[in-house]
Image 1 (cartoon, helix red, strand yellow):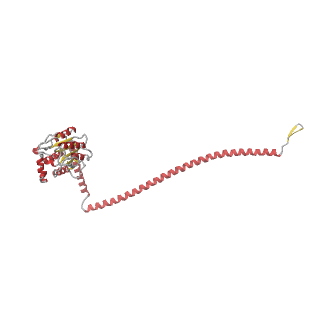
Image 2 (image 1 turned 45 degrees about the horizontal axis):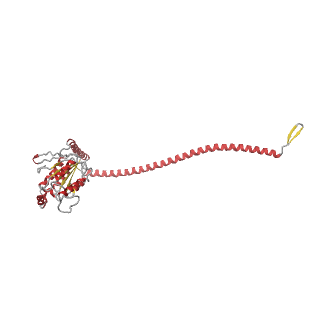
Length: 363
């Protein structure tokens, strides 16, 4: 409390007042120190957190690198195993070749002789290929092989013999034995050898022989015979294209036809369906026949058939033909089928093919 003495003012401070002031000073000092520590701690934590983040990134990169190293190690191990396998196979093949060389040496063969023989064989094959290519380029559309008619006659037929894939359909029904019904019946009761030597049938086979002789060397062909069924003339080649350049095979086709005996009825529909088995589709078709069909895909119920029914079967059959393909018809007409020529002529005209009814001495 304040007191006045001789013009002065004095203060009396109690112990509590002094203690209060001291405590406040201590609190103030503590607050100052605490604030300083917090600020220093925050700065220190920031630095530590930055270092921790950097370390975590290093750990992540290290783990990724470890995965890559493990993958690389796996690839190396796999390559090593493959290399060891190849080495083993090469070693085995080398041993086989060495044994083979020893066997050949014991048989008296020499390396030089074998090499020269192989060179000669390769040269022969190259010469043959060269000749075929030259023939294909220089004589495309001309005769693939020679066929000379009686008296060395060659006829201008107007037939389009070109194309890359040429199909020839040959009628092998019993009507191909003769032009007249009575002669067909007579020949059917004779031996197969006499049937195969019938004039009409021989002309049909010669026609196929003549056609194949005129085909381009670079083209493919197929000869399909048909009566109630349809099949390739050369056994085992159904649905396949044959090469005109293969002369030995071409001769086998002709030989097979000469061993064929005409028999049965006629199904044009089955013949045209057989064309669908060829891939690619033919781009030129030759049809050698003598009349309209006597059945469809299945046998008829009765033993006779009318002309109207034959026309119906024919028009049903041509629906199986591929579109936009020329149909060249070679007709050897027989009695009792007057509408055949008209129907086949219309087919040739619509398909932009050709139609001919050859003389008895052709080809």
